[in-house]
Length: 597
Image (cartoon, rainbow, N blue to C red):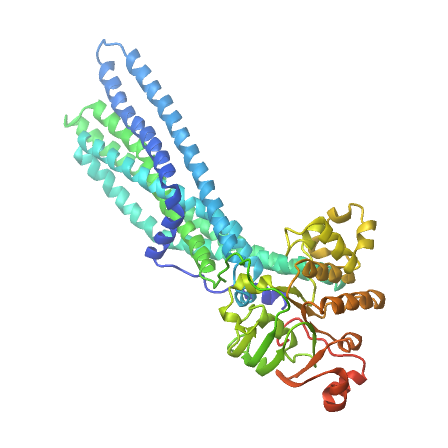
């Protein structure tokens, strides 16, 4: 896939959820923390209530200015209200911020657990960088709507209503003027909100594109450098970054329009109230102190109106993130349970009966009625031209993919009837590229067998001819192997992968060209290890070296998605022209890592 294609693969139309589904998803994240949010909201409301008392105290102060009464008590009361209100609101704000972080943590844990259980076809259809951005940046936006938006809407709404009631008690005419201006400008703000959501979602998609391209480049960093492609890759990442910037700027533009509308509404209301209120004071309809208190209530109205606008704005931002999180949650996952202790012992038999399979509905079939029987212990080799479907056999046994037709049985039991954890616990699998994870050598060895003892680790190191490597490493088993095992050679990575599989003590061992990068000495040694293991374990191997194939108890020859012959090396040389041709060249073609395998 080219860099441009990697970007385009994630640049689909943004997914929009109906409002009801968005609120349902929001409540699912909000519900475990509802009491903490309620406490924070309650404290915020108390702080708001102390603010409501301030204009009344100011009115009393203005009334006393016309008399000889002392104003010291009123000033002390105003000071106390300001200090108390600020302190209470600070505590409430801390509780809400802490709860918001808890919401993000819970969402990330849930999403990570789900993504790691995705079925392999789902992962292959989705860019890894985009999935990572949903765990990181999208869940960060979630905090804004699950606490800030909900609480701002609740507290701002209640404070707004309380202020309106107090203003109505002061003077109904001036209240009508204020509400008229707010409704007029509020209608314009409502038209802006969907634009904020759209721009935010496109910005988040662009962030996912950045992660996708970077993950792609770092995953093949040596190839990028060897190809002199740094500038080209930088240009692609810059393009994705500019898209994120462009949509982020658009979202910021509409949010600034919404926020400036709040100030405009208050200022226009202030001018209208000042003019009409002054006329009412002059006519004797209201007192000067009433006008002063009303204007103070009007300025106090800035806070609840701002909270309501903030809630609406944050909801639009958060709903875009929610849609992307829900989309990830809808990807199909595997159902995993802990493996049972009585999942069987001894070598496992494998049977394929007229199996058909294709990777996607829009792709041709890889298997066209594949049938073979592996009765038990021993080594069975799969050979054939590139694209014959050899590696796909292993993917179907592991249930990375589900067969479209036919039947696959392990120990005489359809693999669809096996608990998935039990099936995979019985299998050791070494992939074509023998992946090594970032971390220490020990962590890689015990990855599939975390309870392995030191004695078992030492034994497998000797069998995989890794003991000499461990002795010369600066920190032995605790040596960090680098990103994707970058500090190890290709042959060393293959030996680590083989040791990891052996340490699991499987009943069925799948080796997909597991010795392709080994030198002749190490290949012969590991070939002997595999031959020894095959006396007690069923070993299936995709091999392209004739020296490995000739040791097999049976050989399955595949071509164009079918089994054309099964037998020993001697039998097949005499009976099958394709096998005879491959054997004559001393080389059996390898399969590419993608497509039909």
